[in-house]
Image (cartoon, rainbow, N blue to C red; front, top):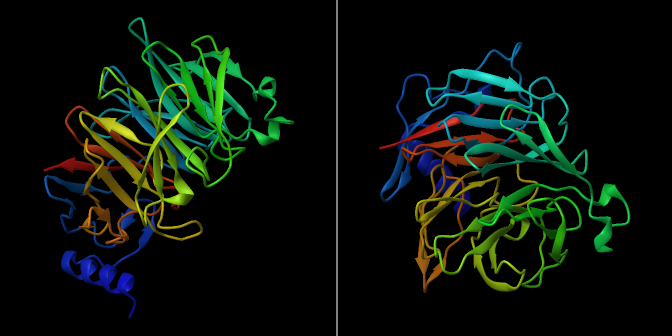
Length: 346
């Protein structure tokens, strides 16, 4: 028996978790057994049915990303064009839904301007970044950056994520396209471009997620996931490479900063792996402290040992939202049209 299979079976046995997802968010273990996941001081009670809705009225396809707005509501993006944006309260009650024009809706970033909430949506099928009000009115649409000389056609531009700096500048990660990071001012005017496809320090394979990191107020930086390489990379705001943080066995999606920690959805161990994934939490010193749904994070000679899915709880988790009570909401990709899962901090 392989080490990975042994670890999975051992963890399943310890939790009494023996099932795969059956339909929607229903796992065979979840109906009658309380499940706690996570490690150290980051443990959570699992609510598989938190976000369940009537799929005939409010269907989802891939649930790509999820954020909390200034009113405390949980806002989720799906690429189902009957209702691209679904808004919940923290109990899982449906409050609102809108959007029929985002077939490749992927990245969702909350933008706060003068006390008002806006959204930045990346759509890799439309090859655009779209800014909207919180209720869906389009503010602007940003096309592929032809002026950079890095793109010959719009089809080469497949943006996956955005992040916004303190001055209103925003950065676009072209994670499914040519792997560049494009820097704009708040009006959508081009300022810089860096990155590109490759495995060297300053380049990316699957620049899937990006995050503005201002935990050090005097030295803000960008955190960018090279997902297919199992690496988190740090750059300064001008696009200069600073460091790489390997996370072996973890295809990390976008970094989500909450207080002093960084949270990630881990899609899978490696490209093409099916029915896998877990979450990962990293502290301010870039040390992994918890992997809900994954194996215990262990370091040897200061190097993180390879991580694995520990329980068959998640199926391709794609993003997390951490609310003001430290609870975590998980959106999943290619997971049988499942709604978000809630993890309540214990």
